[in-house]
Every structure is written in C-alpha cells, then in structure tokens.
Length: 313
Image (tube, rainbow, N blue to C red; front, side, top):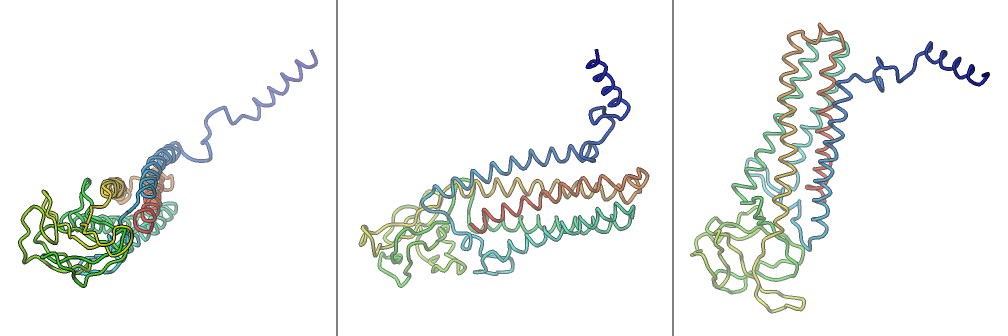
C-alpha cells in the first residue's frame, strides 16, 4: 500500500507541475510552420545528397571525365580562357542574396515593414541575377558547344599525340595525355576559346576523311597520330566524353535552379504580403519571412556543394 500511495503522490505532483507530453507547447520552441519547413528541408537534403553521391560515383569510376577548368572557361561578351570566372560571379550573387535575406529576417523581428520589403527586394534581385547567369551558361553549352543530356562533346586525351590536317598530314598541334578538347559541329570552326584551328573552309560531308570523321549528327571528330605508349604510330580520332556528364549536369543544376526559381516566386509573394501589412497584424515577428528565409539559406547551401562537385572536382 505504501508503494502504491507513493506512486499516486508522484503522479499527482506531475499533473500539478505539467508535463512535456501534455500538449500545448511548441517543440524545440519552434512553431508548427517552422517545424514543417525543417522537415521539408531535411527530406530535400537527402534528395540532393543522393544526386551528388551518384554523380561522384560515376565521376570517379570513369577513366576520363571533362575538366571543369576547360568546360566552364567562357563568359559573356566574348570572354574566353577564363576558368570558373563566370560561375564565381553566379555564386557570389547567390551568397550575397543570403546575406540580404538575413537582414530581412532581422527587420521582421523588429516589426519594421519597410526594412523587410527593402531587403527582400535585394534578395529577389540576387536570385533573378543567378537564374539569368544560369540561363546564359545553359544556352552557351547547348547552342554554342552542343552539349545535351545524351551527347558530351568534351573529351580528354588518354595519350599524347599530334593532330592531322584535313589532308591527313601532321600539323604542329601537339597535345599531351590529360589535355582536354571539344568536338565541334562540322563547318562551324573550332573556336579560339579551345585552342584548336579553324577548318570551316574544307569539305565536311558526313563520313570518313583523311584527317577527320564526320558522324551522323554532323560532329567533326579530328584524327591524330599517337606519339607514345603501346599504340605509338597509330592514327586515332577524338572520342566523345562520358554521356553521364551532360545528363547529370543539366539534371542536378536544373533541379537546383528550379528551387531557386520557386524561392524567387515565394519571395515576391511574401514581400507583397509584408508590404501590405499582413504580417504586422499577426504580431509574430514576421514569421513567414523567417520561414522563407530558411528555405533560401538551404538553396544557397546546396549550391555550395553543387559548385564543389561540378566546378571544382
């Protein structure tokens, strides 16, 4: 009986003092909306992690892979041979927009409507700037360099050699194992930005020629003479790079770009609501601004890993 009485007394004390399981309390001092945002971001993080791990597995299991410094060496206004300069500008815009988002959340906590609108507007401008840069990068890769989800014209030599001219004779264009190249469309020239001569004035009908081969998609694969290794003296031609590179690049950066685009749309909607005084009336420190801020910081953080995997490794 004494034991039973002690247990009942303890239960009474617990009931009087309250319990964490009684309900009515925000877990981790976070509102329901913020908690659900964290759940969404966690699940999204797993999705991006799966994509990037898949890319890494394919990247390091392939004998050759496009070199980022070569693939991403162009920029608007005719800038060439400037590795990663343009993508650095893209990244800077996104990181700065994260800073302005922090300021917007701070002004929301202070219930400063005008401050929230101002800093969110700057965040939106940064997001639009990033999307514009990404649109140019995609346009350049697809329209100018002809990379698609199933065609990768960026290759890497696995042996040293010397290129042949249109007549099949050796030129002074010497390369070493590990050097990169871009396979162009026949008749379009080889572009000064990739260090190859322009042969657009020759006859590039489809089929096999003395110094090159033109495939059914009109890509011109230059021939070369191997100068070292077990195949020294043999004539070979440029090979396309791994198809997975183009597919993964467009899918992962496109998936991230869709997140940025969605974020910009939500930022605009929330900025308009903030400007109308809707969140001031709720007197909760502009919590909606804080929730979209969590999403925006997540998008910025994911880009750091995308940048690392695609542009630096």
